Structure formats: structure tokens, C-alpha cells
Length: 291
Image (cartoon, rainbow, N blue to C red; front, side):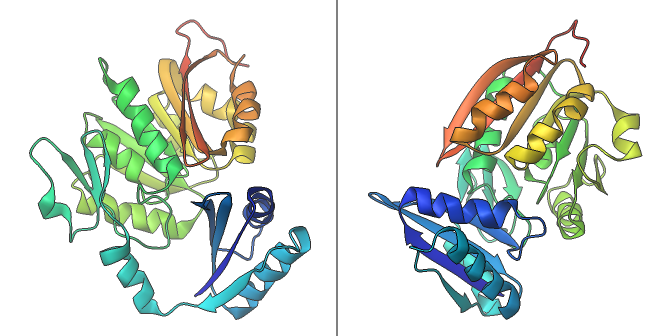
């Protein structure tokens, strides 16, 4: 495993992130960026081997030549250290997300969710995951969500949170087989495996997803471009009166994503911003006839 990193001005870091995140297939297994100080931003990406790391460096150099991008090997013990020491407990309302080593510290009334650091996305630390949880807490007040769909589930954290807070059953899907396996493991750790079905699928393209529709609550924490592409299909599987929470988009991408969903029988119901990322909330009209 190799880590690729650079610091610089926001527009350069965004350009580098966009190249690595939007290329399909990308030489990076994971990529993120965030503010690292006053007028300074940081890019972090991870690649499986030296060839992939070199490809990441070359790609960044081609779109942001002014960045001093570097790649360094990571030892396997670095992931263990990240899990046990580097990731603090995440609190979102009454949800407490952490590895098993920190769960005994949860307070009475908390809903603990055990998610270990690893290759699947969704430990709760990223602005998109946290934004989805905060959005869910807001829309959960005064109503129940019995049937849940989590598209691009990663670690399964969003589906697990909803199931541990009143949800009856959920389906989680991911295009990555490794994430599917991680979600199954996390469902067992968190005691919801009997109520969560996990499938490898692109978007909503799985027979089980369509047979089980419509859903009272739909999560989709992916990226702006696939969110726009999936607007029609995710609207169709959302029940009248249901809620759709989407994230994985940078704040400047929010207007484009919002336009893709409005006009399909959906009403804008919230916008949460965290660390340069946006989470959008929509409610489906009870009398809608989506296109």
C-alpha cells in the first residue's frame, strides 16, 4: 500500500482530487482532500502498489504541475495504528461510531456503532458520512423509517445506524465486492445482520432492490456524477412521502445535483455542509408521478 500526498492552494488540490476521483478506473483506491491550515489544503490518496502510486503522481502532475506531490510506502501496521489510535470517536446526535476498542466508553442513551478503520469507506469521520447522519437525525424526528435502502454503502454505517434507531429492514448495495463483505461483517458485529441484506450492485440495478421497493428512506453517499445519473432510478424506488439523503458531493457541485432531483416529484428538504462537502435532503411528494 502506498500513500500519495500533497499540500497547496485549494484550486490546485481540487484539480488533483478531481482527476484521481473521477477517472474510471482510477489508479487510486481512495482519495480525499481537506483544509490543512490557513489558505492551505491537503490531498491524500492511497494506491495498492508502486505502479499505481506512480500513475497517481503522474496524473496529479498533469493537471496541477505546481503541486509537489509525493508517494511513500505504508506498512501494514499503519492501518492498525490508524484504527486504534488515529481515528477518534465520532458523535452525531446519539450515534457513537468507533472501533471496538472504544465502545466501552459509550454513555447511557447512546447508540453505539462498531466500525473499524479499513479499506471500505464510511468510518463516520468524513464530512459526507457525518452529513448523512446529521441529516438522518433531523428527518427522523417525529417519524419512523421502516424500509431503508443504502446505495454505495461502503462500511454499511448508514444502514446500520437507521436499523439501530427503529428501522425494520434494510438493503445495502455497493459496486465494490470488498465493501459488500465489510458491510456483512459490520452488520454481524452490530447485531443487525438478520435485518440487513447486502448485495453487490451498481446503483439500484439489482432484482432484490426492485422487488423490495418502495423505501421510506434512501441513502446514497457516492459522488456527484453518479448521483446525477441515478436521480430517476432512486426517485422511482422512494415511497411517496419518503426521504432521500444524498451526499459525496463538493459544496460547489450541490446546485447541479439538486437540479437533477427537483422536478421529479421531489421537494428540497435540507442542505448540510461539512468540511467542504454537501449533503442534500429531498422529500417525495405523496402525489408525485416521477418521470
